[in-house]
Length: 92
Image 1: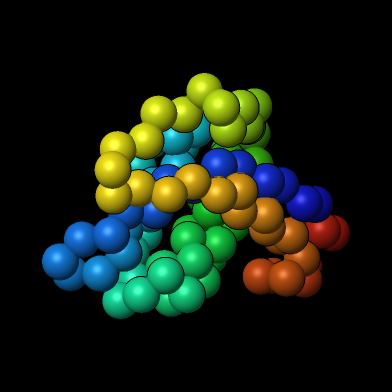
Image 2 (image 1 turned 30 degrees about the vertical axis):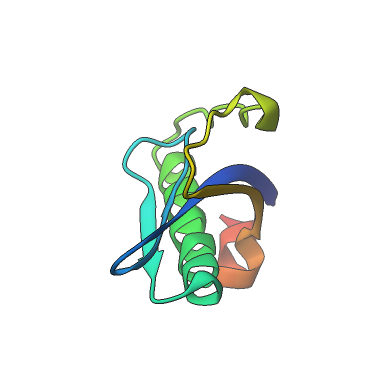
């Protein structure tokens, strides 16, 4: 149960924020990029799990070249494996 979605990282005064263009409301932040990446993976996993639990269809991941960035933003793919966060999910 692996999924990969683009994430937009933005550096700000309070740290690093992360948003997922394909999931409204799926945002995270951290004090630095490493922490923000970790929390983004956790948040994305929980968001995807919520979709699956509710029987909702997951959106297709956006093409990286279609995402517009501003000057303080960076784009990367975040891959999650739901088994890493909760082993029993694969048996649901």
